[in-house]
Amino acid sequence: SRKIARELENGSLKSIYIPDEFHQQLRSLCRLRHRHVRHQTRIKNRIKGHLSTYGIIVPEGIQFSNWSVRFINWLRGLEFYHGSARDYLDICLDEYADNRKRIALITNLLRGYIKDNGLSDLIKNLCTIPGVAFVTAITFYTEIMDMNRFADEDHFCSYVGLVPSLHNSGEKESDRGMTKRRNSILRHLIVEASWVALRKDPAMLMCFNEFCKRMKKQDAIIRIAKKLLRRMRHVWKNEKVYVYAVVA
Image 1 (tube, helix red, strand yellow):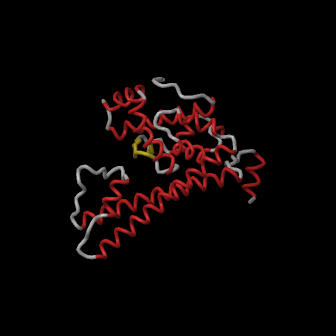
Image 2 (cartoon, rainbow, N blue to C red):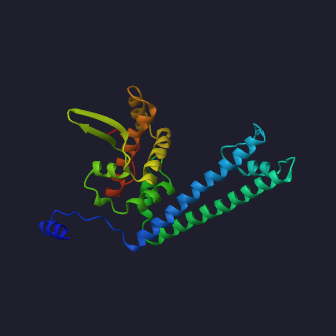
Image 3 (cartoon, rainbow, N blue to C red):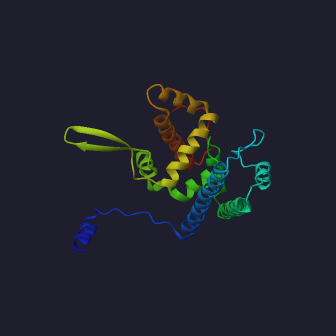
């Protein structure tokens, strides 16, 4: 305690960011949606494993990846030799339908809170960036809350986790890949949004192709993710919409 008091007197202690009650609760609601989405993925994998166990092949005319109404109806109409297998699938499908309703409910609640608290313009500006839709924008906002708490782009990228992990030992320096310190939700979200951005922004695609000439695609997409992150920071701080095909 004497050391803390001494450092406090010297002004060498740095404060941490503590969100207000509204933003804390809004982030909790957004993270709840994220957990439900992950749970939905587990339910899908459970159903896929069930079909694979009994050798059931999905017909070519049905979209497996989109989980459309037609696909769900096809699953409902499957027949099994024993009723227990049918019951297993029905329970999984009911759980999947209930989980989808919860995700839709949470999304609508988030839209309402954004509108009621004057955040619509910021979210709309973020949604003009290629690869960024409402869910990405609201998750980005609730995880950051205040962009001014980051001194520069390097500190911002470090918080998200888009920086390498370096090990120094004497005169040797080794790269251990991506750092373990990260915001796990944001880093995954930004990387996924970067793959979508490649299909929508020519400048992003051009940079990605240049990176791929000297590195793997998995490493190149991290560079694109950092560019996308800088664009999101610029749109937020300047309160402007995104301009397509800007390389710099």
